[in-house]
Image (cartoon, rainbow, N blue to C red):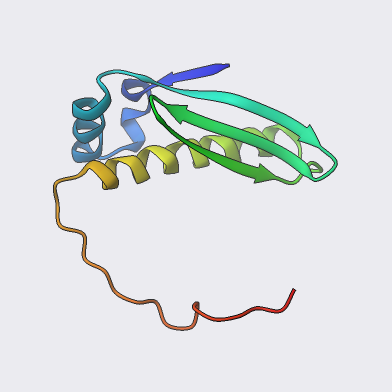
Amino acid sequence: KVNLTIGEVASVLTETERETLVNEFGNASVEITKAEKTSQGIFVRFGIKDFWVEHHYDSEISNEELNEQVEQDRIGFLKDLARKFSKQEIQKQEVEGLIGSYAI
């Protein structure tokens, strides 16, 4: 289990994001609660209070690259939560060319 407090990632969050997260969670920690290597790759789960997300990584990457990708995804998770709890109105615009069927 790896913990990283909201205050410890403050340098990569905007002041607004940090304030939003502290207001919602206090100085809670983001935890890595699952890290498993399987035949399909590496699975890592981040969590804070009742919120969590899992990411999949290629099992062939180096430990250094894995750590970099995990760190980027952990920051992305916090930024996503900050947007979710932000009081700002979210403006939506459809992204052309992404919606549709894709062959397997």
